[in-house]
Length: 498
Ligand code: NAI
Ligand code: MG
Image (cartoon, rainbow, N blue to C red; front, side, top):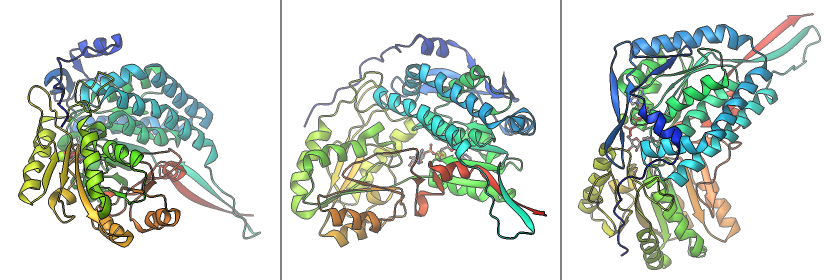
């Protein structure tokens, strides 16, 4: 087994903007175009998971601050934003995209320092948001009402109108990308927005607020409320004057948000967890399948909703795949996420470290065997080893529950039917991958698996034009694609007597 590289003392950020950003004593809320303290005056600390040091203090929004943010968003919606021509508002969005591109390295470093994701990954996620903005700015001129003409006595047409005040509640694993993924279509369609980042990772959301300001959006179009789930988050979910909430995070909280939405029948979309099957048939090209399978469960230390955490391997190639898998996973570099050679950074928090390491005991107690890893890394930072469990059955807890760490369960299957049956035997349905050179089989499995995204001979591929979301308890609705833009609009029918 390859030796683990214990994280060195934390590297310093290379971007002067990051150092400057972190030097500010308390980071405020962005409400109605102004930076304000929380009404309660409370703040909370932000921790760098690599060093376990406090790197910032941030205002803690509660119900009163959410109320103020919603009021600001409502007046902007009824006021200047609602009266703007589509070209003007999409021009503002594109200006925001350009500012993100200009500051991408700085935003990526801030993200890495705050959530521990390797800088190479943070860069690619942050970079992709520029294209997301461009796509939805373009959608605003593509999607419009229609004029069905079925009765000569009437002029009939539809209007596609913004919904009103929309909110996004996002998690800590990919904070900036999720924020833009919700904000861009909402604003493009003419809504105003309230963003609540996760309490663990508020920094790039605050930086986003600064860029929104610099781009010149009217006050109140975008509001940023940093705070906890119970408090800022629950006040959004329960708010009677928020028209839509889009959430990414855990299944439990997703269900709570859906229940709370009943207060005013908010539109709700949920992007929740997964336990995605990655299925390798014996005819697959293992030289690509195996390293990709490793990336599938180790990228961002496995803190990715679409991670391929159930690896189904056809029985005949089980030994070969397990050997190559543990060899490759064991060669990954664990280290400072600011180092571009690092493959695995720390988990985001002590809480996640405890959760993930807790599953090592659970797996062992259920009779699974650790073929690689299975422990936290000694020393500072919330680091955990890439971990491969073998002798796993699909009904064990480690194969059923989302662990959200760099942990894979390797499970044998006999034939195609067995692979689909076991792959679908889960409460989740976010993504799946199938590795085979048999064309018919690839498409049959793609049809057979109940999941929102299916990858054939690849993993993690994504495109803003294609819908993304889950079957079953992996979510409600789809993000991305033109339908995502449409989900931020109301469709109105007008009948005019001629
Ligand atoms: P979480 O679902 O509690 O947090 C996600 C967001 O929801 C945060 O902004 C949080 O402040 C907010 N939130 C929490 N409680 C809320 C409430 N009652 N009302 C409104 N908003 C609320 O996720 P957590 O506890 O940080 O992670 C637990 C597990 O959830 C992870 O181990 C992982 O399995 C899963 N998860 C899945 C994610 C995904 O990408 N689908 C992202 C993060 C976590
Ligand atoms: Mg939680």
